[in-house]
Each structure stands twice: as C-alpha cells, then as structure tokens.
Length: 386
Image (cartoon, rainbow, N blue to C red; front, top):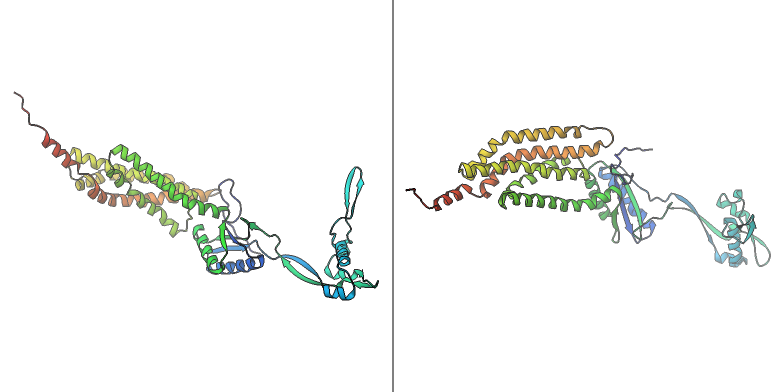
C-alpha cells in the first residue's frame, strides 16, 4: 500500500481529486488505449517528477467468455436454439411471463440456483438434447475463456478515453508539460489529450492571465497619461512593472512555488504597488526640472535621492505587513503563502531595480522641461514701466 499527501483545492466547487488529471483520448479500441497508457505511466515514473501517478483505466474486472463451437454442435445434432435457451436459463437472460400479486405485475425470470452458477466449471452439469434424443453436456459444445475487462468503459468528448491521476513533485505547469511531451512521444497518430480539474483550470487560465495583465497595464498607462498629459512619463513609470514581475517569478523557480490563481492575484496587485515608486521619482524629477531648471539627468538623480527614504519606508512597511501571509500555517495556508511570496519578492527586487534602472530610462526618454521653460521666457516681450 502506498499513501501520499497533497493539498486539496482551496476554491469552492473545485474537484477534490489529485492536482494532475490528464486525459488520453482515441478512436482506437480500449486494448490499444490500455497499452499506450501503461507506456506513458512508465515513462512518467522514470522522469522522477511525480510522487504518485496512476490511471483509473485497468483491466481488473474478471469476465468469462463462452463461445459456441458451431461445427461440433452441428456434428452432434444440437441446434443453436437449444444451446441458447439452456445458457439463458443459467444466466437469467430474460423473462418468460408475468404474474400479478397485490395489484402489482412482476416478471418471471428463470435462473439456476446460485450454487449452480458460481463458476464456469459448473456448466458441465447442464445438458441439452440432440436430434436423436441423447443428452449432451454443454461443456462439449462450448469453449470457455477466462479474461479481464475494464471495470468501466469511459468516453470523453465521444472518444474512448483513460484518465491519469498524479501528485507532482514539481510545479503543476511543469508536470503537465512533461506529461504531455511524454504522451506525444509515446502515443501513435490519432491520439489526443485533454485535462480535468485543477489541471484544466491552469491550462485555460494561463492564456487568460496574459489578457488580464495586458488590461491591467493598459488601464494604469491610460490613468497616468491623463494625469501627466504625456505619453513618455507613463512609459517611464511602467518600466518598473517588468522588473517587479521578474522579482516575483524568482521564487517560483528557486522554491518551486506553483503559478496558481492566488499567485496571479498577487502579480496583478504588484503592478499597482510597484507603479507608486515610479510615480514618486518621475513626479519629483519633473518638478525639479520646472522649479530649479535642472536637466533630466540631474533632476532624476536628485529626485531619487530625495525620495529614497520614503520609498524604502513604504517598501519595508508593505513587505512586513504581508509577512504574516508567508509564515501562515493551517487550512488555506498554501493560498496565502502564494500571494505573500509573490508580492514580497516582487516588491523587494522591483524596488531595488527601480532606484537604479528607472533613472536611466528617465534620462533618455523624459522631456527636457527646463529648456522649454527657458525658451518660453525668451519669447516674452521686454516691457518697461515709465
């Protein structure tokens, strides 16, 4: 016996099955499908990326196949009808009539006693009559074969299918990618693959994540463009976003934190938080250009130095405020840790890069406002009071 522990899904309505639910589909028979699934399982175990992996598709149900030897029955003068009726009586093939009792109608189904149909060897005790009136044992007329069949024949999207369940030892996305690559290498042409449960949510939400991030960045850009009445300043401010996202992805590779819906919430939150650092530096740099008539390089350096302490104070206060999410335990701790690790790591690394990288972008991309002010002053007419 083997037992493995894994975190159940935290979202209501999600299935309580294993994290990996991989579907193998084909139009071929179940025998061929079973062989392909066993090859996939063997290769997946060799990869070492799964604590536990199995398939619910197994030939575990015993079955007895009874085949009538037509040539032998014809030689002995036994009709197929007599053989069928005798076998039907043993196996309770159908009902012969009905009877009424207490106002209800019941079927009359002939069947041999339980002790007379426990195994296939008992069939030698049943006889049929030949055309000459001789009694012939059924065991002389039929061939018995012991075999096994699947407990249930499952179809997925109108195709023969088998499901592979697994508990990954790596991030869920990496495990699904490995399992799909193995399946594509092992399975012949005509086989397709799909997902269920948490795996299906991850695959479908992965494409939606890009759209969500795109909308979040567009909204932030439009709001900043309306505030600064410029397209350059919002672009400079948003250079902090990829730096923060890079910082958030670092623990996912180092500590194998999975990309799930909670990590995605943390990433979207991070976009709004980290943009504040860029706003502080760009806002003060613009004011230094206008009020003190500094060039962009000098203005952004002074702005970064002036706002260094507020940026560090807000960064540390935010990270220490989210720290309880990281050290949380108990029910639902995995979801809180995913949000906390994403925000703290992204905020820390994003803040560090913002202080050094954003001034470079500002130096080359920002408008030279102090020259515009000097030009405007030169255009004013000289007036004198008499």
